Amino acid sequence: MSKKIVAPSLLAADFANLQRDIEMVNNSEADWFHLDVMDGVFVPNISFGMPVIKAIAKHANKILDTHLMIVDPDRYIKAFADLGVHHLTVHYEACTHLHRTLQAIKAEGMKAGVALNPHTPVNVLEDVIKDVDIALIMSVNPGFGGQSFIDNTYKKVKQLKEIIVKNNASTLIEIDGGVNIDNAKKLTDAGADVLVAGSFVFSSKDQLTTIKELKDTIS
Ligand code: DX5
Ligand code: ZN
Picture 1 (cartoon, rainbow, N blue to C red):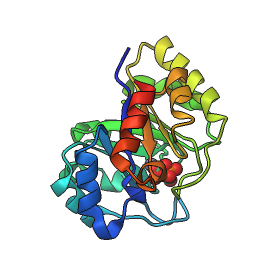
Picture 2: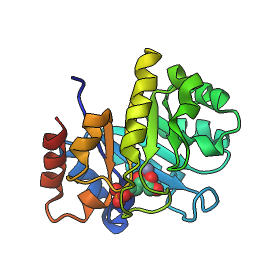
Picture 3: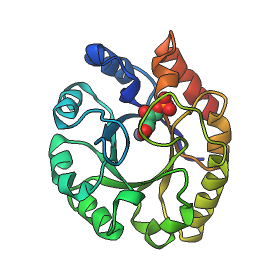
Picture 4: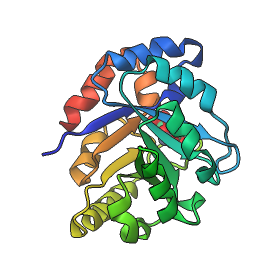
């Protein structure tokens, strides 16, 4: 069985102690850093952008998995590549020419991801699935950490897994929003490969142990 991945979301970190929280993730069993970029247009919130990611990249020693919740993401593909991020995930709902966007991300040497809002059915990815390295299923409405998990997600994971297998694609399924120790195993059993966890990790007392428990539950 393939290795399951945990990606703590820095959106829930203490921004006044960002280096400390990055070192915690560096020293943990987590696999990736998840970075949430919000523009206040695609989602009703603004998070952080290039200067902060530049600072994060200086200290982080794991994969930088970047989730763009922004309109017209094509404008910034090169800028994110220059920052050294490894994965760039755009929203299906924000891309008119998704196939072209995916190729542009890959041309800059990054893995290409597509995120789907809770209302977007997974079958919209069928015709590009071979070009998608990471399919991110939003299990909350994007824009904020700390929301509760939407149960319909399990069904979407199973349907997406079928599409991936049917097309002989190697797309990873990533779940983002409301992930915790109670739904983690059910998600990976349904076919998820990557679990993003923000508030569950950063609001816990012993963050290293929380990450380890998440990893142990799904491996
Ligand atoms: C929400 C972001 C998530 C968020 C998850 O729009 O995409 O990555 O940080 O936070 P939790 O795990 O607290 O739901
Ligand atoms: Zn995210």
